[in-house]
Length: 232
Image (cartoon, rainbow, N blue to C red; front, side, top):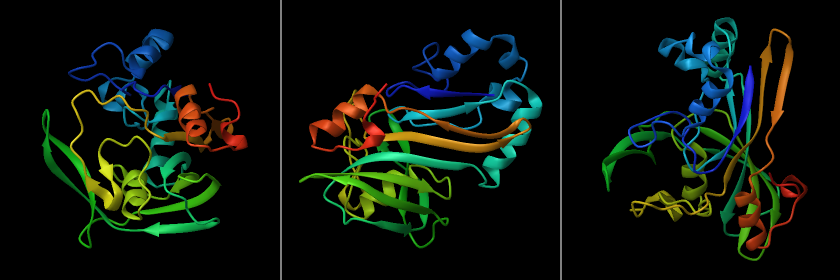
């Protein structure tokens, strides 16, 4: 197993516009044949993905046994995931649980259409726990624990509650769908901070230091907390 700290702006796996600069390309360069032997059926070891703008923990298996065992934990929602987010607005101190159903749909974009999530009674169950870590006059730093894995779940839940993630080019206040410019490279205030799962050799609890860009974003809006004290 390997858990990588993906940089913001890097795609997780190759695609039409990113054939040789993805995280998976870097992992294959490092671990070579071990990942290639896993093949497309096992996603060349990738156990999950992050949006391009989101930084942080991405788990990858190096052999079939590890992939099958840990992938089943992702599917049964036994993997512990915790994110850091810089959001617009000053949230009330404490914790809360957001339980709003989400449905995927396609909307027009600069490149044709793109898949988004919307809050709807007909959607699939989605739950996110939120803990406020720090606040400034204009923003909040929160820790998010998603208990389901819906598309853009944290981004939509926070935006729907009136606290969109800073730098989000897609979801505005109230989860309103925005129309981003083609090359929107603003820093997204979302970081996959911690990842925990069971392994044959024992429990794995990985933590990825926030990226320099994430830390700079937080500091610019007046946020201070031990979780962002040492950016990578």
